Image 1 (cartoon, helix red, strand yellow):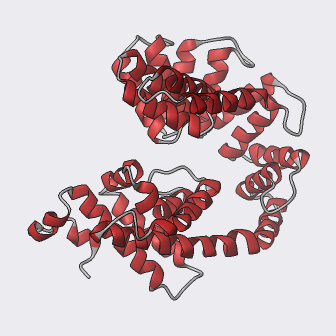
Image 2 (cartoon, one colour; image 1 turned 120 degrees about the vertical axis):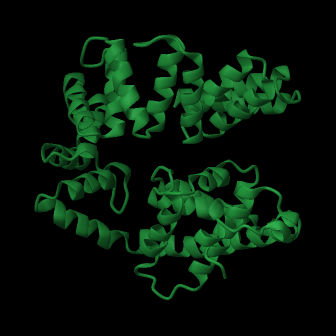
Length: 378
């Protein structure tokens, strides 16, 4: 089979384009097929992910558009959910590291099997079928490596953490905070974040700041939260930069300073953090620390929304409702609501009740209103 990287530059695509007119879909379909073939032909399960990630990144550097195309395709849950799940599992291709999301997407692909003979035909059918097989394979590997082997991984982290490795200390803190590979223990999480932070690890410094701000494993202390967010931000942690911006915006552990809030949101956004991108959009919309520039606000809202930020999705809904693009408003309210944003749920309820971008549906309106109130209550 012609290798994907060579195929991207192929000149004679006439016959293929008779089947699929969209050039980006053509590229993605080839990528999907090669991804599938690499999985079913692998004979080394220990280095499989490393080899696959290296191959993906060699493509990603020059063809980022196909990754965005997969993410935004209207049928991506049927055609590409397994591949997108792999991106989330390892934080590659512009996707945030999120193992829970990857598991959800693998299961989605497998559960779609019942629609195999109904949903698509021809080329779409092959991609749909490959997506299911990829999902089954990756889910099996996920369970083996991330559940069966979890305990041994945790013990390895702990071993290196105890001899002073700051990255391992941070990972042990994560395990204790979220109950990954061990039981949840906030005091232990705080302890290991402290070790990591004091050893100069930027993400450890950020998490220690969160502990002090939220009272996780320690008493709340906004001054210390601000201190550790500052350390983290200066060490180029995008999450720390965003939270430092929030401190300056809201006066947490320091005086309010919109100019500095804008500065740190901007750094966080440029470094790819979705919430930082959303907050930078708010700055441009409201004129916090900068001039009001609505076009820039919209650009950053879109970046945040497409990177999975529920607040960014909500603000896009608000923007589109304001300019009377009601179908687009409904679309973004729905995404925001589905991803757990209470304000998005309230607005989606209103859309269903008032026929904004959709048909009137009082049962859906009530459902989303109840979800929003329950979310806020908890």
